[in-house]
Image (cartoon, helix red, strand yellow):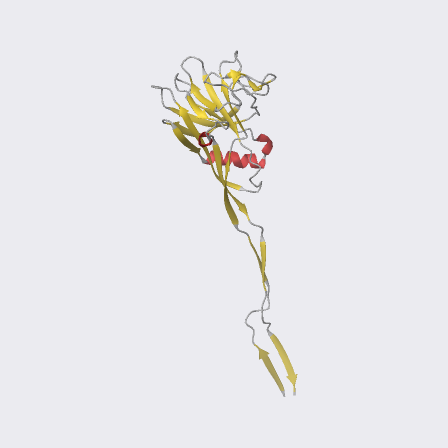
Length: 248
């Protein structure tokens, strides 16, 4: 007589494997690695590399001013996904009775310098070696292709500057700029701030990275996420379906 005895199993004899990856969110606040102001006119090379202020807009008599800023992104992992980027600036003076202005942020396409010039007003100081000027990327021997700065035709963001105090500038395009710089660090030349230059008396004074009041200094807040290391999870059965035969 042959009798077959079966041992039931909770799971089929199989193994399943899966990868689990989580994204970790983080925020970093960065001070500018350098900042400066480009002052018109070209014939009078002035700058403000080490000064406490930046300038944007157009003055009543002496032309336009454009602020340039760049940030060191090396503290952000190259694998990060940039979710948001916000530039904070502080307006410390605006002309009495002057127009309120919109400022646009454009991505710079050429490198530039910050020298030892230190102006005590909106007309700048004689440019020092390595300074960016309206004509120069690095005074006195390197030049912008286009006086006033080489920058993208695409506006990364626009902000209305109404009154004194802090103003935040943010947009998806700014986040994309930072993402691009992470992928290609050699193209990270920062942004240029351009005010309303169609009218006079639109110039504004901003705090620079050298401002003695730290609350007036610009900063860039970047929100990003980084994938956690992938974890391999293997599922194995704790029972096998077996058959044992006994012959009597």
